[in-house]
Length: 392
Image (cartoon, rainbow, N blue to C red; front, side):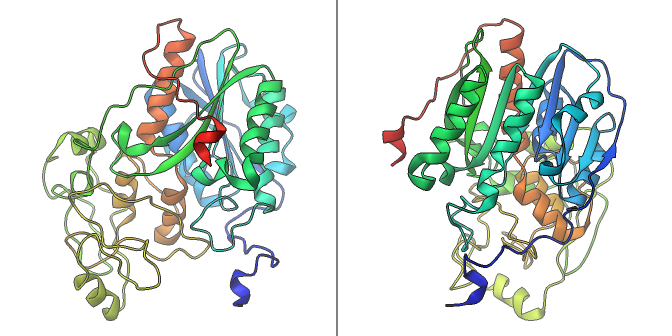
């Protein structure tokens, strides 16, 4: 057996993780009745989507330094803590929240590696699988109006349903009605068939419905819709900071908005053999015999799930029309980050961030629905709860 995949060996950690003393940056936020706290924030998929629907993200916490730098660059009114959440006391974080008795929502993209089928060292007792308990400490301290936990679909079946039952029950004990659903991001306009499991807990005075789906297989946004047309072509290891043309479709128009300068559009530095391999791979087909998930994208279909690829991420997807991997801007568009959202940390850590992120349009749909619920508006949507028999 290859020792690299031996689950008894401690998981290698990203050298950009801060396991030392947490680093706090306290920023003043705008007064707003709708407040968001982003735990395990990554580079801010939840934060970006929540702010687009009218919330203010007052606090973001993550252990990954480049992710926190990305939050700081794009969310000027958000206080941040970079550090191991196990070393952070929720009570001490209250001084970073300035809006008092507002409608607070806490989100948590808890670590997914122990549940993910793309992780060859996946196992149910991975210590990261239990980080949800840190999230629960924040819920108990802040008593928010609603909570959201996001994870890979594998969390529902892991340990014979233990995590599904336990997370649901523990949130419920804190005074919430818990709803669960497996969401396909493509059904909310994301050009990616990313399936993630969501727990939504709302205070018992509220009635929750998951937001109506906006897209179906007949009109999914595609890779071509996201990255072909207005972005300039790139040669190997080339960067460009101006657009090729005006937006070519509604998705590009939505992601561009008034953005004038193109950022994060740098192609990987491939050896010639890799360039030839991508060139000779048919769009939609795997580029490697051993790694079927690493494909050359088909411009006429949504992307498969974009992942971060571990601590030294290689390029995951080949460009559909150019002989190279994707730029970080192209990966960000596939996650529906607006072009104005700059990813900090270079191409390798940019892959970590974009691969881990919650797609912005999914976060926006959920937060917009929560805001309507808080305002007492009648919700349209669906209940969506998955009973255990549906998952096994």
